Length: 252
Image (cartoon, rainbow, N blue to C red; front, side, top):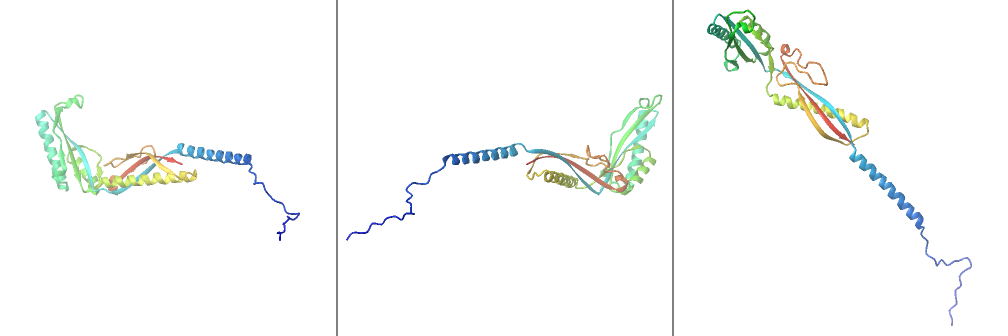
């Protein structure tokens, strides 16, 4: 008995050919993707290799009560001869030293220069005799009484008393605190600049700092401000120090 032969229905079609690939479209797609990747790489390279460089200045200030004050003064004496003027100026210096110790200044905190003697005519035209000079420096912890002490020194025969210079202990720590405040000020500025320009990656590339001085009663922050940080410091008994930092950043 023979098997019946199955014949395909009229509406059935036999697909004997594999699907065709449009190589032209595929090649164009690769070219477009490659071009886009190249543009992205070039953009990233330009972004990395050409950052924006911004320089800012930050100020840090520290104010603490002064722990001591240093006074420098000159003592002069005139006499007909050089030895006599030397003896006279030494006597004045001894009197001022006694005044300082009576005011609470330690002997170890008082220093004197060598006596300098010269013809008085070298200083004042037509003057006769000789003039001798001694320089005295003293450090006192009675900061609030410095003004009265200066007046007493003049009454005791001091020819010239320089402006007292305030001092403070642990000055290195104060310098460090002022620097930290200045850096914080600079970082706050650069953060605002980076946000406003949509640049969120920052790198510090340069740093420098300036100090207002170590034991000064009047200090001026250079270039950035003009007020005296220590104005009235002597009367208030406060020690002020300022640090100015200049920082350069790269922004991406």
